[in-house]
Length: 158
Image (cartoon, rainbow, N blue to C red; front, side):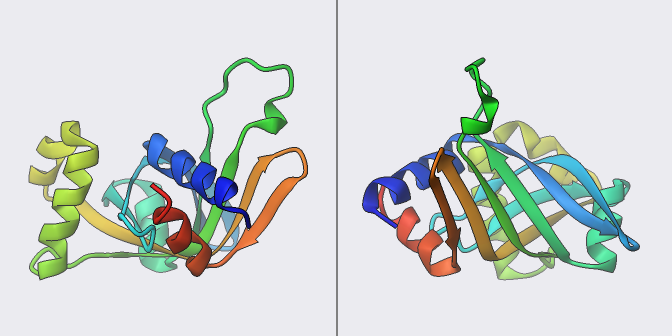
């Protein structure tokens, strides 16, 4: 993957704040929208989720999940040419009493400061989604299967 593509991938992940979250509800797929904050090295993406939400219950039962981050629709003729990445991995809650929680909370709120009041609600939990593979479509003919190492290299481009 060329450095220009890695930079475009990093821009895509950093420029968006919401993603489609795919979870498993028993044996059926379920998709919802979530806000996220990417860790600086793209080793994980942070999600602040209510335990009242169906997707959170699904993750607690089966952490295997995926995130789809897409470029915003700009009304072009063919929306299939919008850049997007599907990340496949697992999401697990971060223990509120752990040292990792404080750092993750700070990173999440730096990206999404309006979420601060939600951290006071007892039903919310901070999850860390860790990608094990990804599929990036940068446009026509620009399709790549990626590893966590590719994501780390992309994070280093900016």
